[in-house]
Image (cartoon, rainbow, N blue to C red; front, side, top):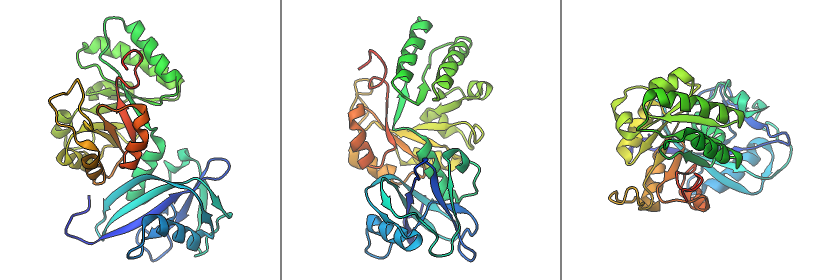
Length: 319
């Protein structure tokens, strides 16, 4: 995260898609910082210029296009050895013009899968994560005695289109959890969804799944516990935990509680303003958690979140 006592360069970038859904990348020219790497097109904000106006100007100057509606995707604070930046990134819903490199830069249209193998500046990698993640992060309740019923409920969740699931089973014996996780893995894979296990790093590694780290587990780690192909997420409640999550290289976090909840009635809620303040310091996507419903997605996006996370809001019979 950028230090508070240094000059931070404010940069904007746009996510442009063609009719096939491919995303436009531009190559940084020789002589510039990180020359040769591929990035999402954009540029620096001028003094006193809003990010939205800067994006419209930069994409016209660089690509010869006029953009229409835009929506904030993520803000990435990043410290390079040479400088610190804040990168504001927007999804561009509509634009006019075919797009060409007006400054001699090479351009490529690529799929989201192809981006994974593309050499990019480090600050652009959290953007790729944000593009891959959905707006909802579904957390399961603790499994009861009937695993078949639990899996039926999971199937219903996947059937309505949810794509990222955290299997939260803190009290199951590892032997039972392994069997349940394997069954859940088959369901999520068939639905094209991702599955993370709460807390069990070794089991996640064994099964080839992602892991979600409780805050206490997160703070005991000194490096990322899984390789780059598996999701690593964490629960965070304050700036100290968010900073440690960034230091070990997690992919995304949940932050809360935003509002007071029955299950954590003694935990003071952050509120949206404090959530937004903390979220702006995190160099990765952050889900809002705590007393939220799917209809809160607009407020979550307005305050910088990737989306909303929860149990009761998404799990059948828990709402």
